[in-house]
Figure 1 (tube, rainbow, N blue to C red):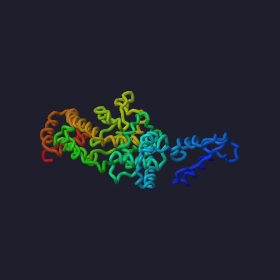
Figure 2 (cartoon, rainbow, N blue to C red; figure 1 turned 90 degrees about the vertical axis):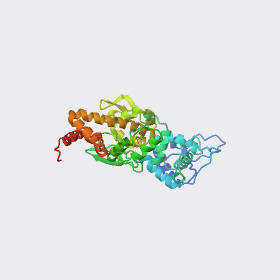
Figure 3 (cartoon, one colour; figure 1 turned 90 degrees about the horizontal axis):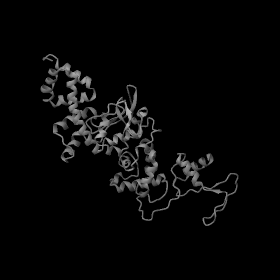
Figure 4 (tube, rainbow, N blue to C red; figure 1 turned 45 degrees about the vertical axis):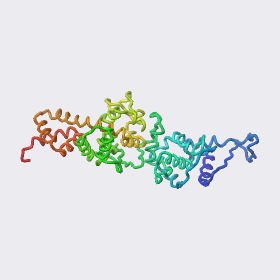
Length: 393
């Protein structure tokens, strides 16, 4: 088997542009090639190499093999892409994004677009099939490139319908997907990804309101935009997994460690499942909150990396999920006010702040809500101290 591995790698490297590669494998001790024609019975000493090659391919020892490739006669291929570029980028993205974990699903999904049947697609056929699929779902001509990159993966992943228990993160230890950056904060390692290229919160929510998908006032949109200015540089989402929150997403930067993401998911679980994210009531995080299905509390740090990071970020850009976030965010605006009163334990100071400042000034509302969203105790202490300053200050 070791010799076959060396030979197959050499042959694939030297013939990567060839349409066929011929192997003959014999029983041990055979020193002479046998003549074998398809109409005749196979010689007893001649073995079927497909079994051995597919086994090597399965365990990643050689590239994906394209054995026994019957053509679909009704298929029309779209080969107007740069195959060398597509293959190179797919090699890069399969590890950076982590889609190589779902090769079998992707292969089955792409077969109808490849013109082949009952086959493990090779790199060239994957690129061609991807380009045909991209065309079929309406990608612009400029973006039909045969590459399963971040934008293509975002659309393809939900269509693969991967059960949550099929997501294998065993080899995802601290994997950094494309577009994410590794960072360390107070000794905690994780990832960050900005929402660069995504819309501002006020623009997005105004569009949703005009289309009748959410009910929200202009003052509420303004307030959520001010919070987002602090949390996400004003954009509809960003991703952070480098602090004790484990995962933070959305324009409010809701986190896992205090159950806010879990509460968000419960409002409308179905769209989250498209991204492989589902709650498990029997799996508890921090003793109080439902866990994510497929990841125990002991392994919670897996959610900071790899395919989980990509899934959480992509989910936070989904319109249905954003609509749920708006509903939850409005609840938290009220909870912050109630929480302030509870923390101050002083009705006079509370009423003075609310009536004379909070209700009258958009800037004060935004400043308070953004600070309380990050650190309730410090925010309440700041309000108390400011309300007790001498008038001249």
